[in-house]
Length: 158
Image 1 (tube, rainbow, N blue to C red):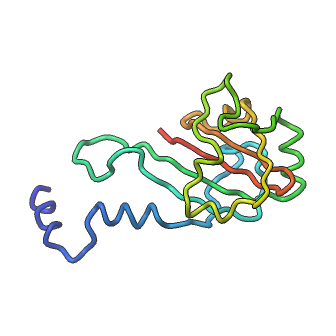
Image 2: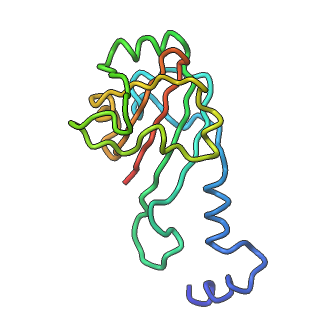
C-alpha cells in the first residue's frame, strides 16, 4: 500500500485533491433519489445535483466520509400539489425558516453551479415534518416552491 501511495505522487493521473475538485464541480442530472429518500417526490421531471465531502476524503485517516448533497428537483404538477397537500409547508420569510427545528441549510446556501436551475421568482415553503421523513441516515432541509413545482433539497448523509 505504501508503495502505491508513493507511486501515485509520480503519476500522470490527477491527484486526489484534483479528483475531488473535479467531482465536486460536476452537476449531475441522473435520478438518484427514490420515494424512500424523499416521500411523495414521485417520478420527477428533472434533477440537477451536486455532492461534496464534509471533511477531507483524501485524508489517510480510515473511516467514512460524510457527504453533503444539494438537489434542485422539478416535479410533475400533480406530484408537487400532492406533496404540498400532504405536509404542513409554511412560507419562508427570513434566512431561517423555523426556530423549532434545526435547519441544515436555507435556499440562500445553494451552491453557485446549481443556482441557475432555481426558479427566478421562487416562493419557498418549508416543512419541519417533511425534513424528518424518509431515510433515517440523513439530515435534510427541503424547500418546496409549488408554483414552479420545484423542490430544493439539502442533505447531509452521515
